[in-house]
Amino acid sequence: MAKKEGTSQFEGPVRMCVVCRQRLPKRELMRYVRTEDGALDYDAEQTSQGRGWYVCRQEACQKKFLKFRLSPRHMGGKQ
Ligand SMILES: [Zn+2]
Image (cartoon, rainbow, N blue to C red):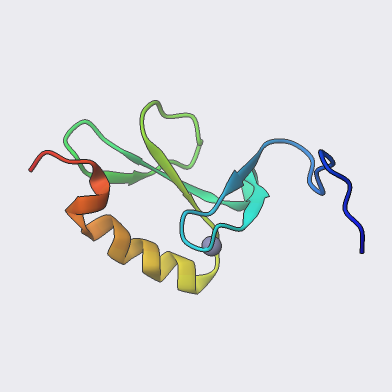
């Protein structure tokens, strides 16, 4: 199965799941953003400003991301 360079198999914007690194259409992913007080918020509209993470809907990825988000090392941050 040959795949041409530059040809997306999806229409519209594509984002990568931070856990499994699979590339999927943005609307197939769940976006999380960090709020000003350092909490992580599910961004249903996918329009919030600031650092965001996209996670696919696979249960394994959701679970791993839950651990990921609880680790301050990955949050870039101030404690
Ligand atoms: Zn994933």
